[in-house]
Image (tube, rainbow, N blue to C red; front, side, top):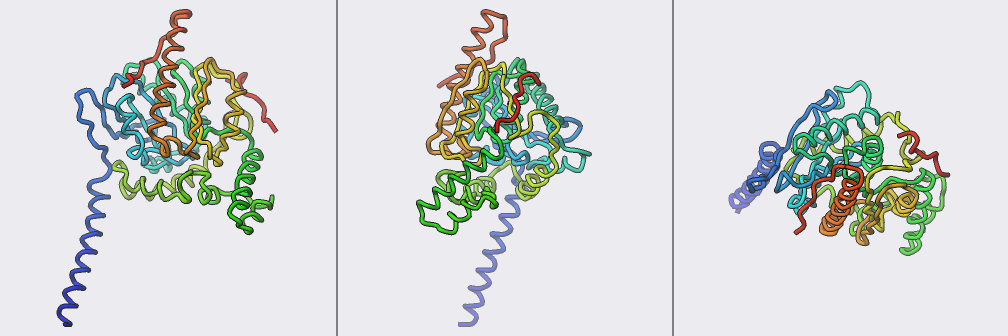
Length: 375
């Protein structure tokens, strides 16, 4: 009996060791690559580029190199989206060349931080233009599209305002808008009402206390970050399954997000939550989660009304909070197809009247433009 028990325990230990060994091989040996797209005109490439003098990682995927280039600008400022790409963008890859870029210090580009004396918005903007030029030349496209998520929506609007000639359109999701006070007020209102509904007296008291800041943890627990979840686990689960990320990359996500958030120097006007861009010369589309209280969508919708752009459209995602592309990927795909088609039609008309160069169509299957803070 003792011998049998010993064999059982040895067997269980072997299974554990084998499981751990498999996980190590998976994360260290097999990870850090992107799956191949098996079509003759495709591209599926995970690349390290020197941008702004430091090495930064980009992921490029698409079934046809001749389709429109869509550059995703992640939030944070140091929270990457590349590690979620596999979970939401496979359909997008049929209609676009989708590019993710882990900026200085973020995700796979974490090692770029020690190479930099400072980290600033102006440098990040210059990096954005440099990468844009690389993509325009590589794919022979006069203009590309920008999708800006959260802090990336701030960066994206700055980019298209200063160099509209590079971009077909701007698509903002999890769009930054409003002042810090406005954001906190809407978060507090959301948490207070949720606490009333659930009868959580402690949370209700916390929301009523103006000295207590409403945190992202509070929002996650109530569906104000991910509508169908009450934690960040779906994001973490997707991140752990990312083929492009090694274990080291995964572990660097939070470290990079904390460091970049702490070190970022805001040397450009306007700053987030302190003023706003009031005019751009490219079409603008906002894809807003109805339940987003990280960057409250009510403020973003009001901002879109104020923004002067040649074409503006708003799409509401009723089952999403802060991550519409992740929470409703099929709907995001449909809305992006409609937005890019609308942009093509706009630039075609401009081309006829003024000689502007229209962007590639998807196959469907400056300081004077900055407003003072609104208080």
